[in-house]
Length: 250
Image 1 (spheres, rainbow, N blue to C red):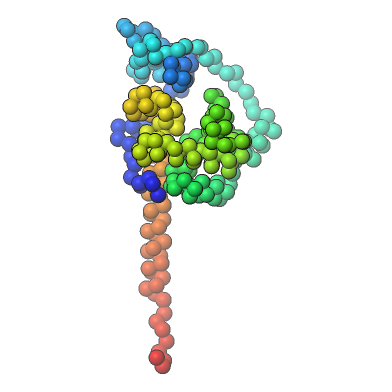
Image 2 (image 1 turned 60 degrees about the vertical axis):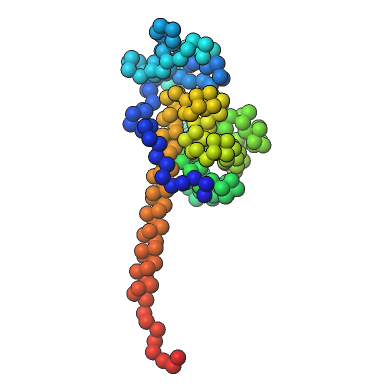
């Protein structure tokens, strides 16, 4: 496979990048990327986007980097009707079904199946009908324009979504010379943002996403390797205790 097994990203941990519990503003950047923050303030010649209600966590940008800031009201609490709950349950694939589809998609693009599984977990947690606030759809959360460009006719069809998402990740890995962190950042924030910042963009959401996927990928790879070692040990033990060939004419 094209991706190695030891891919921990230095300096980015889930503990230090916990997402904010509440976001009250939507910030549209000049590069087209949208991010959320709690509030913002003009500090000198820069605009400071606070990621939580306190003042310790923030990102500073130049005013020209921000296209607009809009208030996002909290949605009223709603209980999911029984039909919707049933649909959500039906939208989840069995682990065996999902693994088989991921295996086909991974083989088609020479991508480790555990990497694809880690992305699916981070994007939709295996829900084929998942839709983000930005409109991304399906298992690998494809935006409609991206899906169209990849030839995906229905992002809610698991096979189509996984084929399209894997093809897109393949393109990004090639574009960033197999640098997994950059490819994941581009998958989340868009290639334009990665190119502009010459690396992982300073977006809290993107940094959390990259760390989460790589952490899950490493966990899966280590578990796979441990399982292979156990299987090899059991096989060796079975061969060692097998009865000797009976004596007789040779």
